[in-house]
Amino acid sequence: MRENRRMKPAAVFLACALTAATAAAQSESLHISSTTSPPPPPDYSRAALLRITSTMVEPPPPQEKRVEFGLGYIVIKAMNIRFLFSPFLAPLPGSVRRTNATIPDAFTMLGTEIPQTPRTWRSQRELNKEMRRIERTERERAKIKAEPE
Image (tube, rainbow, N blue to C red):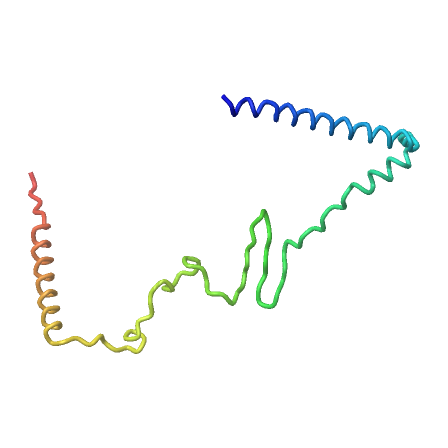
């Protein structure tokens, strides 16, 4: 309760000080404007309006080149997309029908076989033999005997 009693006079003093400062600023601005000459009337003539608007209008920005040629490349700009074409670059995947998506294999390039141990070779032969046996039995099952009615 005591703190509120002390704060009320401070708030009133602050409000009075702000009001007085505002009134003093207004009276000074009125005093200054009454001693100076009044501003000239606005000039709305055609020449004055053209002068004002000609200084405000900015010239259009220069157009960018849409196609730029460089040494070994071409840059094409259209619809906020920049496309770089260079015939010296590697072809994009899928654009050329060749095996450019495979990892180079030194053994096939040199015409050599991949070295294998005899155990690996033997197990590979056994696997191939089993595959041939399965294919043969499947072919025999697939034969259909047609009987005339």
